[in-house]
Length: 221
Image 1 (cartoon, rainbow, N blue to C red):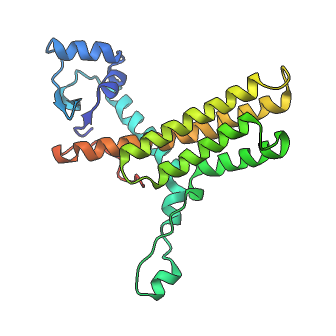
Image 2: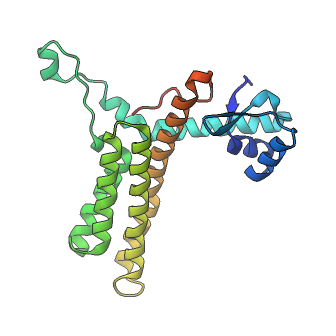
Image 3: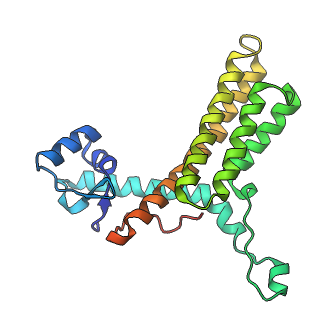
């Protein structure tokens, strides 16, 4: 396994410890770490790892890459064909739309079904609309920090929609509960993966000047 820059969370996962224990090991000199832009960075070669723990890191990174590729693949495909009008003008254009993101696609389907079943004025529909609005703003935001902030807001708004579905209306109403399940299983995880992608990209950008090799190569905007 090649040397990598790890966060405290990565090191905790590899060693089977808590982040608090890793910080204590850093403070007592048991683990060597360097602080960069306010974050502790640990070289994988400096961790007391056995073969099983090294394989755990390798597996975790592989899982993260797979999740990010799955979440972002539609965007990468959509960005490939040049815009015909731009090409005719001698410019290379790229199609980029929030509708290419799995998170928005899943949310749109749920929102339209909810509006048809519950009515546009239902509070749960309002919160879900807010979630999709924040996804759109996040996808089109320029700065990584703004993207992460909007996607965090989107996840919170989706969770509020779930709360309204479960607590408003008649107790145990199957239709509302079914929508809540769809949001929790189909939408919120996709927003979370999208958020994780942008957070890792933001971290990669901060650490790039220090030669970090822990970034994800295929991350898309």
